[in-house]
Length: 428
Image (cartoon, rainbow, N blue to C red; front, side):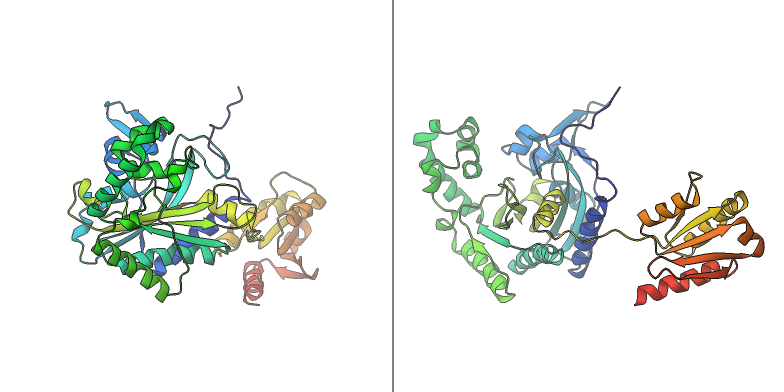
């Protein structure tokens, strides 16, 4: 029986996994420079968390969640996004009471959404995300935006466009909501069934509809910026002031709507304008969610964050030919001739590895010529050749694969010699 990989998932194989590790390591290092700490939350959570945290009018909750009952008949869901779980942990572990505020966190891990698989959109995908909880200062909005831009720029992604908008406070949103209902209701029958259902529940989500994106009413829909309260407008102006101050380019797009219900005030997306990337240009999205902590049982706490798909980031790097060569050469490959030499190589290999060297040997009883070919395929720096005769005389031949030079070294000095040569090569 040939068992196939589930649709919408992928195997990340050696040769490809290195770029994933590089991205995760780079993002982690940038976050640490900004004083963000890692958090790890469960892959599955109570379904109620996402109903309350993500919003029951979202496509994620209505169509895309992987939900099941466990043996205790508790409804659980594979996490479709990371923010709700982080906020649940923030509340449950009373992190709002920590002396160091705001609490600044980052995470990475698999998320699950039942979507139609396509390039850069999988049913199991990996997100890297950041959440800053406990500050309503617009300066932290600018910090979060500069953080994500720093990650992408350090990884070498070019042709980036940062698009921002304000979704306003509750008063602004309520006024805008009524304006949207009045704008769409006369012709709502022309829109898809999802939009018809959203009209009363959450008309802002109509603006995010892909099916009806070209409808004339979409282009003439009232902008949230027309309904911002003085306080919301001042907040957004302060965010843009800070972005101007640090020299971060951005575009204000009043039609920008995030797909999750918990956003307010600052919302943003990071897009790729590079050629060959495809129709879906959004690389990253996020925004402020000041009421989310309270809705999940915590005290009134401001928050802001973002998340990006590592799959889509890799697509952008490949489209721009910016994937670095991350193949690490082997420090040493031991070639043996004879049964005693083969037995001795096990001990020598262990010693090299215990001293921090990347080393390997043949395990298929191949002839010497095939062993040398294996060493070449592994791009090894040094090949150590040991035969039964050399073993009896207490030495081993070490060949520098770059220069072709070869030297006899005593078995007692083998590891020390090789460590010194490798270290010297690294320092050049």
